[in-house]
Length: 111
Length: 121
Image 1 (cartoon, rainbow over the protein chains, first blue to last red):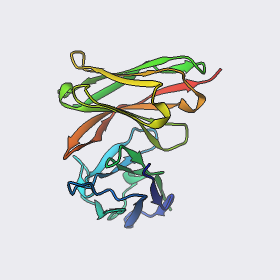
Image 2: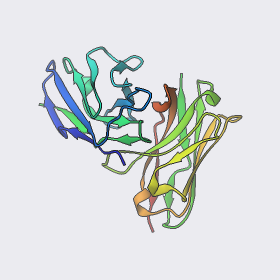
Image 3: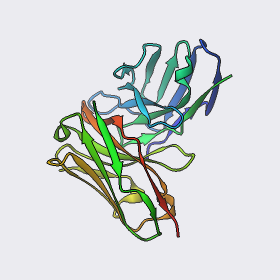
Image 4: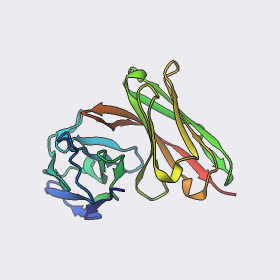
């Protein structure tokens, strides 16, 4: 089974600071057709998860462009360029190349 | 507006059964795959099962294979999860999610508010 390891598990940031979250896979997420099925979600406190990024680097509908995704193969990164208060919560990466697996989550909190 | 409303959760004894439902609206249900994702208290997200747009293909995580069945009624725009032989480790909030197919895989673009299932004697 594919394991996604997110680091750090907790991230403390000030408003306006830029931060990055890493997601590393135990197997390559590149399929035989050349597609990489890696996604990012945010779960705000008390809410359901919402889609941020699909297919590594594409912004979900209505997602601010301070969010960006990058990576390939087994290493992926979510970057927030200028954290805002509404960005606080737990971030999850998910892969869909080999069934579906979520990372363990990264909690973004205010410093 | 896409809406996914789960129902059917509650307290159930170990070994018993429970059936969850998810009523979908705001989109053409029969055009999308659907899935269940769960979250144990204070834990992370865990994929449970996925069903294709027409119900012809289903996928399960190993720990629920043979115990859970995902199904859908496209005429009623409703998704189901039949859960048998429930265990304490199945205790979680269960989210209904819409599966959008892009390239050759489904991903989950909309989520319901979730329904709590507690397995305890």
